[in-house]
Length: 202
Image 1 (cartoon, rainbow, N blue to C red):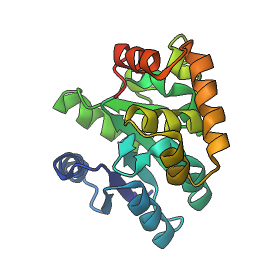
Image 2: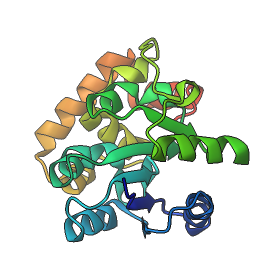
Image 3: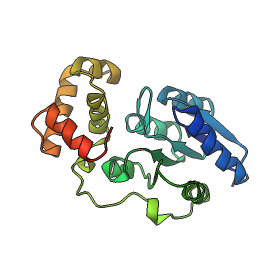
């Protein structure tokens, strides 16, 4: 099966590094994106053509979890792998919901990155970097919408700005924030930020 691959990261150096590995594996049909909006644009223009996507979790205009439903709607058959600075257990629940099992941290060695990408593009299992089913991490309980709001909160954005970013009512954002506090066992943003720091969430 021919592979048409989309690589998305907001840092050109990382994108180029991943693309270099992909090309060294013998794949030449590779496209790139630097934001959520550019991912959606590429997928829309090449509707149904992209077979594999290697995406950073957090991009300049938001977190990939916000757009997974739309991505899958545009291209239901796309296989997605996440390459991120954040540890995988934090995002396992929403990622598993969308059938995403491949996750690699950017602290991986060159050999690990190459092996991960090779296995992903060949649809081979790579248990070491598959999403865990251990939900003991408090942040693993969050839905994709709650993770998106958490991401904005950690960036210092208030309810009004988050609502504008997400194009939804402030009341809905307030509800999501309340659920985040409940699920993580925190009472305010200071406690939430401290807990996020302890789990290396940035």
